Image 1 (cartoon, rainbow, N blue to C red):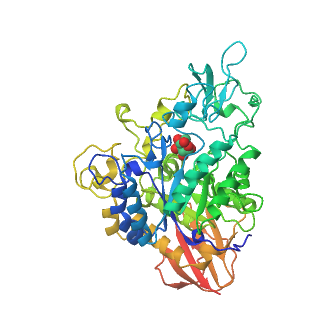
Image 2 (image 1 turned 135 degrees about the horizontal axis):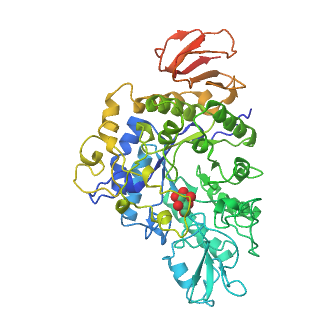
Image 3 (image 1 turned 180 degrees about the vertical axis):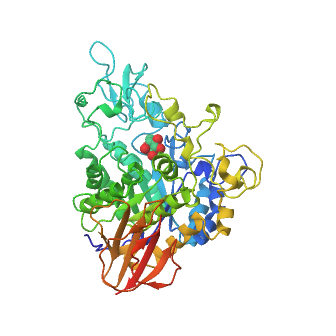
Length: 551
Ligand code: GLC
C-alpha cells in the first residue's frame, strides 16, 4: 500500500482526451477544429466536470496518420485553425480551470518535414544524420530484421542516398536519430516553445521507442515463431525499451521541472508489459509523472482479471509516484464494444456504469476518452471509401492491425443531423456518425437522470470531494474475486468502500469483512444517495455501490 507523499494537481484531477478531428466542428467543413473545442469547454467544465484536456496532435501535418505525423512543430494544422486560435483556447480553458496537455510526437516526424526532406537529399547535408539511415545489407536488401509496428519491414529505400531509413510506424513517419545531440536540442526547443506559451504538459507519443541500438543488431525471433513478418514474433530488444531511452525522458523531465506545475505523461508502448512501463517513472521518480499503461484496455470484463491488474500496478508503482488508468483511447476499440461482445451481459448501460466506477475510484489519475461518458461504441460499418486510418490501412504487409476509425467517429452531441457535430451545418463529417446517435447523445442523456452521462457526472463530483478517492490507499477486501470486486480507499480521515457485482442475473452474497459501522451511500444504482445503511448482506445483479465514512 503506497501513500501519496507529494500532492500534485493531477492527483485530484480527471483528464479528458479529445480527438480534435471529430470532437466539434465550428467552421462547418466537416472536420473538428479548435473553435469547436472552445465552444464545448462549458460542457466539459460545467456539465461533465473534468480538469484537464489532452489534445491528440494539432500541429501541422499531411495527416497520413491523422496528426501523428508532424511536418511543423511550431504551427497548428490549418484544419484545426491558427496559432491565435490555439492561444485563445488556452486562455479560455485556463479561465475555466481546465488545463491543456499537448500530444508530443517526437519519435518520428512526417516525411514532409523539412528536416527529413533535407536529410534524404544526400549523405552530406547538415541534417544527414538526423534520421536512422543504414546501407543496404551486403548483397542488397534490408539492413536488418526490424519490423514496423504497422506491418512489414521497418525499412524503406531512398534512391537519392542509396540507403534505407527506419520507421517504427508507417513509411511516411521516419524515426528521428535521438543519438544526435542536434536532434535532441531541436526537440527540446520545441518543448520549451509550447511550455512558454503556457501549455500544462505533454503526452509523449510512443515514448519507449526513441532509442535504437547503435549497432543495429538483429532482434531475436521468439521461440517457435515462423512468420518473420509479424511484429509480435520478435523480442524487440534492440529497438524498444532501451536503457538509453530513460536518459532522454529524464532530460525532457528536467525541462518540464523548470516550469511550475507541468505534467509529463507518456505512452509506454502499447505492447509493453506493465513492468517495462512502470520503470518509466524513473529510479528517483525523475522521468514520467504518469506512464500510460494498458491494463484495462487489454483486460476481459472479468473481476478476477481486473483485480489482478490493479494489484500488480499497486505493487509496481514506486513509492511517491501515482498510477493512471484509462479504458479507451484513439488506438483501441471502445470499451463497451470490447466488453459487451466478450461478456455474456448484453446490458451496455450496466457495464458502462460499473466500468466508470472502477476507473474513477481506483488509486490513480483517470483519463477519459471523448464520448465514453455517454456510452459511445465503435462504429462497425464504416464503408471502405470513407475510411481515414491510412497509416494502418495502407501500411505494407499489415496482417493483423485493424483500422482505428471505428473508435474515432464524431462526438454525439444531440439528435439533430450528424449528431450536432457541425453545430447544425449540413456537411458530411470527416468520419460517419454512429447510427445510434438518436439514442446516445449528450443532450438526451443530460435530461435522463439514469443515463450513463449523469452517472459519470455524479462520479466525478464524488471523486473531487473525496480525500480518500484522490489521495487514499487502495486495498482489496476480496482475495479470490469471482463475481464481484470490493475495495477500500482510505486516508486517516475518510474511508470509501466500493462494491461492484459483475453478475448480471443473480444477487450475490457478500463476503467482505469490514467493521460493523454504518455507511453513507454516496452513489448506488440500488440504494438512495445520502441514506445511512448497514453493509448489505446481498448484492443485487449488477449492483454498483460507493459507500463512505468519515473516521
Ligand atoms: C502512438 C499513437 C498512434 C500513432 C502512433 C504513431 O501509438 O497513439 O495513434 O499512430 O503512435 O505516432
